Image (tube, rainbow, N blue to C red):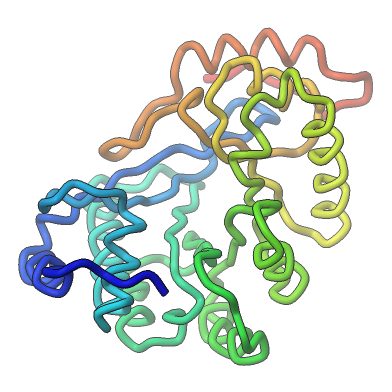
Length: 270
């Protein structure tokens, strides 16, 4: 585990004492079948100093023994912002949870603010899972309520692929590194075909993460696969609820005309 710098505990404690220092942001998840938004991922943005990526804040919190407290706060802030804005009908909301904290009472309690049928918990890959039976046991109370699970960063490393085979998630997120530049890289397109076939076989839904270029969105759309997509080319994270960009809509319309014969019927985006 990376050692935190001096002052990490004080910084985390300040955020816990002043929740407004943790600002939620939301990014739409698009169905490539009809260019409709079917879900959102909730993120955390930290306003405290020094400025650093959210994963650094969560890593420091874990290192100083405040990991579950910060994750619980992040979940509560995301769910509260979503509730205040009124979640769009028929959309899910996903939040990230470290596998080590899934069974922690503070994290479990934080999730109770959501409609469990609309909540997706993404299991992150920042650490190795040593005991999958224990993790599956931690998942059971959530599953009994109707919460669904996703696996983040599929293809980025061995851990994420093992998460898929061990946990049987409802959603599998294809890592951004395997999506960027897909329009010009046949190897990435071949991996997408293989993973799409696998997820269909096991009854999961594949989400392409990190879609940053309209050309990559076009390639994903043209496959005709039952994919979901998320990334800057579609919308940047923001206050609830960001709209799909005009560029993304136009790219989808153009690419949908090139779908292979036999693809699902499409309708124009609203």
